[in-house]
Each structure stands twice: as C-alpha cells, then as structure tokens.
Length: 77
Image (cartoon, rainbow, N blue to C red; front, side, top):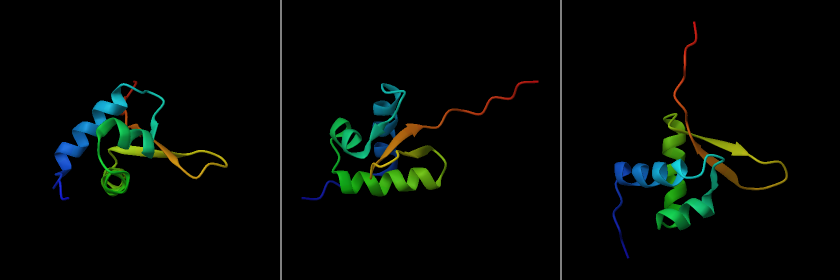
C-alpha cells in the first residue's frame, strides 16, 4: 500500500507531535503519534535533521534517539 507522503505534510505532523512533548520523542513514539510507518518516518526525520529543523539526542546505552524540535536562536545584547 502506497501513501505518498510529501515532506511538508510529514514535517507538520512531526512538529505537532513534538510541540506536545518538550523533552522529545523516540522514533517509535513519533511513528505512533503521526500514524506514519517508522521506517518511512525515519527517512523524513533524517532529512529534517540534515536541514537543521530538528536534532537527534543520543541516549547512553540505548540504541534509539529522541527527536526534538529546534528552538529559534535568541540574541541577547
């Protein structure tokens, strides 16, 4: 079965899920909340990571990352 997701649609679903979870979510949790296959979602997450839209946190001794929405940079003067 082919769903044909587009990048903007996936990005909105991911940002919506992450906005409700400040600490971030694992790939499995994101897949569950967005109703997108985990492997498909991982491809889009890696694209967003490469573009600097999200970041991946590695947890010690665990083989999965947690995805968090990048916060805007603030300049204090």
